[in-house]
Length: 310
Image (cartoon, rainbow, N blue to C red):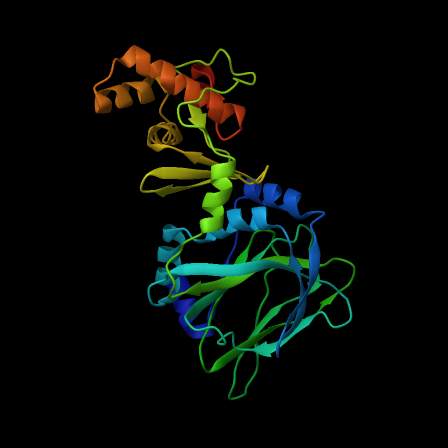
């Protein structure tokens, strides 16, 4: 962390290799491969191709608005407290007019630090981020060609940056945006989607091949599944299917216990103790929720023997 901060102070950017997990990258790329990228013009800056996929963007928007990420960015860059992240997924290709000229990203108030995450499955040519001072001097290049790598860079009155044109047949695809001092993160669109596609409170779902779960087995969470806790519920998002689920407080507690690596049996014992309920009855409820989660591929369940081998 000290090395990152030193590099940022000296050169106004940091390179973050492997920023996005590989499994999550594959899920994201599967949703973007044939995505609808349309021309987007930015006055005084240039033009790129912006992805039109609200469901995917809502998931990634939530992923980027993680308080743990905010704390990391603050420590690595020394920026003031972060309230929220906003951005877009864009593509640059060798097409007439598709280029981003020198600009400072200060038209919107509150921008603290910018980030660009490479979502290009294959290496591209050009498309390099360049940073320079407005007073003159040479430009600093911040190449970022690794799939899932990121570059975070400073937003300041005396700095400006550009993205070099892409050349060749392979386009550049990236998630880019800014960490803002305000407003605080709130995404009503995510809640609306979650209500349409959520778990009905207390409802049982088909086991979908998980009829005989081993209560002594443990669960793992796929990397393509993202969750966020709220005061009275937990939202769970599957990037692979771009589906949203809302867990009530009891289901969220079960989810958290399973995510911590506890078996169904141990999770039931913990909840029975917390609620003062009979363990055997609670175990049936935990088993039903685990079946729903596994059926929707939000968890992977291992039998006890598999867990010990792992």
